[in-house]
Amino acid sequence: MRIKMTLLAVAYVAVSAVLLAIAYQPQGSGAAQKTDRLAGSSFLVERFAG
Image (cartoon, rainbow, N blue to C red):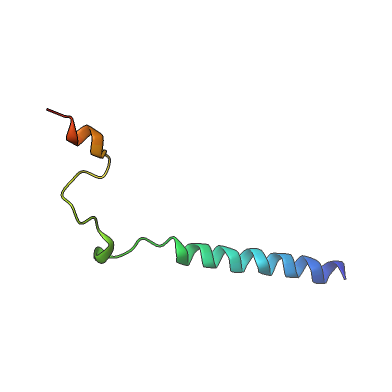
């Protein structure tokens, strides 16, 4: 019984890792930012920067 539960836990962790890897893959060029604004800049800094 203990071996069965251990294998079940290992399988669960493996499946979860695969699903997370699929979910967090970087998207292609279709998901790129639509604006020419820098990725790190915020709206307020741009709006009130002079």
